[in-house]
Image 1 (cartoon, rainbow, N blue to C red):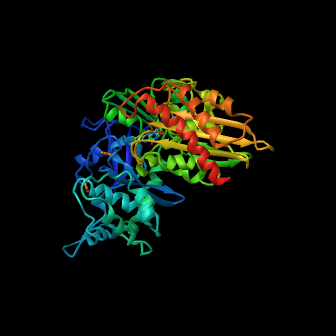
Image 2: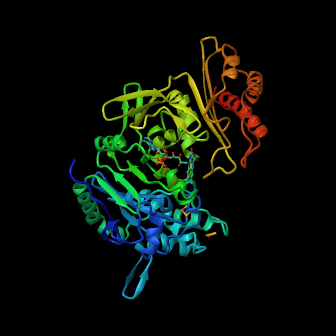
Image 3: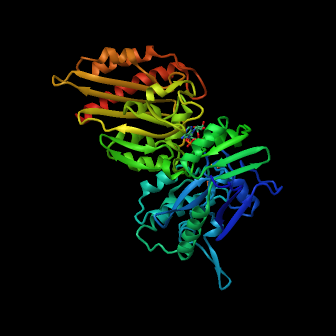
Length: 486
Ligand SMILES: Cc1cc2nc3c(=O)[nH]c(=O)nc-3n(C[C@H](O)[C@H](O)[C@H](O)COP(=O)(O)OP(=O)(O)OC[C@H]3O[C@@H](n4cnc5c(N)ncnc54)[C@H](O)[C@@H]3O)c2cc1C
Ligand code: FES
Ligand code: FES
């Protein structure tokens, strides 16, 4: 390994910034991008919640992919500064410019003005950045696409209609802005940063922050620093640090390892790297794993899905991790690697308890594999939460059903989240259903068994009794959905 660097480089305001954390200033390796932007004068970027819910801190990150820039809206409150090494950061300050003494607004900003969509000063900059990313990535813009992209930008004053009208009006129009002019130069500069970069080891303000340049080096560091907290998208960890004031002494940041971002269709299964973002995963699974895609559409917001990874969801082993029931129903295998070896475990076995897994402290989750389901298998997923968007589950579920040649249930799997300390399977109900004909009456009987199978907790989201009723009712909903399609 060559000598690691102790600083990071990124582009902001069209300049390459080199940030040294050891120079005695206030900036720490766990300082959020939001905080950094505000103290460097980007006051349009606001802190609303500090935990990924409101979107007031939304900025756009540009990265080089296939020699071109890609633009993603993210929550800057959930990003630790070293995560933006090798990226361009764009805020509303970078969208407009002065010409002949007159302010020239970006087409997205002008559209908002024209449609009276510029509302309160707290949320509008974040809304502009979400719309800017949408405008950059899509020439055809529909109201339903806008609603999906704005789910993570909360407005509690006026509503969204003028905003939707403004951006839909841009559909099909020319996509020229100030950033186009500098895109080639920025891509070259980011490329140069990547080519010159090796491992980054920052040791400052009582924090060790390691950002390896390769998987091999990441595994060496994992063995050497088993107590370092691994971060992929940091959407769980940054909330713990920013909101719950957890102090973490050492980080192992694997967020930019391209080796963990591959998506490959192999014989019989789809293999996804553990650092593939949930948004990219959605695109990859849309056709062949529709129940997983459905769950992804109600996972956090677009900004969260751009950061969060399935590797993080699996490693967190939360009882309300939304991907777990549906990944289990698809018989997902988790691939683990240490310096010497690789091994694979069924996800159902890998999750060993409340927030605990069978991962050893020298291992990383490197990938997971999803076998393609057979043609005669029916799989559905469900999420029940207080709000449809950006909310955690009260109860989630994923079900699998296949029939034999006599139309009797041959195979059934019923997984639930939110009903126990881990993702759980309704074994009694599965036994009851197997070998019988799939009818509404049978589903109702099995739903009563499900209600009695679990002892969920009561909390702010729901009482235990309500959770039991929801879990049972989801099976009846499954019957209705399958009756519609059969
Ligand atoms: C506003 C908001 C909305 C959210 N909405 C949802 C939702 O709808 N559904 C849901 O399920 N979750 C939701 N979450 C939680 C979170 O986004 C997910 O759990 C996400 O999948 C975590 O992925 P990450 O890459 O960001 O994990 P990180 O925060 O980077 O890591 C999470 C944990 O996994 C470990 N880890 C990460 N990657 C690896 C790896 N490759 N190998 C070993 N260990 C690893 C870390 O050490 C840490 O313990 C939400 C979070 C926020 C802030
Ligand atoms: S401050 Fe609310 S999402 Fe970041
Ligand atoms: S735009 Fe800020 S609350 Fe409505």
